[in-house]
Image 1 (cartoon, rainbow, N blue to C red):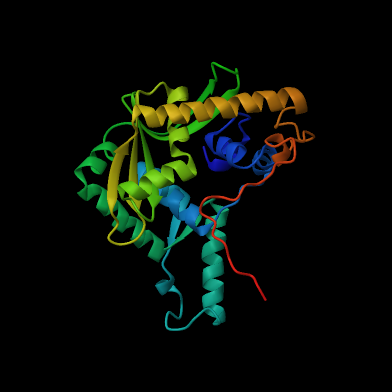
Image 2 (cartoon, helix red, strand yellow):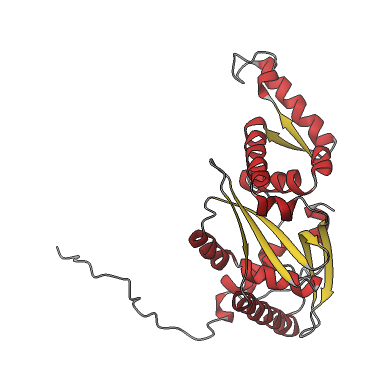
Length: 279
């Protein structure tokens, strides 16, 4: 199941919870209704996941474009023959639903894969037997809301393994990323739906020397994630009851006023410093 098909399932996903809590209900609704979009970073991340977790499928879904094979490799794409060659390569990929990956990105992904294989911990959890790209749907016990997740890897139905590309896999940077991007909430959300007993992150740096680190979350960290999930789902239930379902195209949910229904007085933060703006 590709991302477009997955998005059509009318159920709450983890990324939506982050948008709701960090922004507003209106932003959650807007994100949900947007057509599928991508960026070079997202495309590379998806390719790397597929290369590591579903290599057989990867060959069917992606095409590595070696631009040195163009008719005139010593000339740029101002040359019509080179333009036509590249256009034909891209058209062929589009006809078969394949995504184009540059040779440079492919080589970088292979370096990252090699780094994982050199790490005994990372290699053990990513290269072992398990279910990859597992689709899970469930009803939240507290609210009855239908939820969904697509899990990178499940080992023995007890351990979830989640692969992350990053700029910095050091402990300090990863903790910051977990808080900033809500990875602890993701872990709790996935564990709720899969009934897994543990959640392991494999972080791989996307530039040389392609550092690799494997981390589990403490029970305290997971409980913080569970609290976040419960709060978000309860807000969604309230919003549905008051304004209508987010899957109804006529539904409108409020913006920041949902969190601040009255005018709020902003206080000067402790880190702000005084500046002399005198003439």
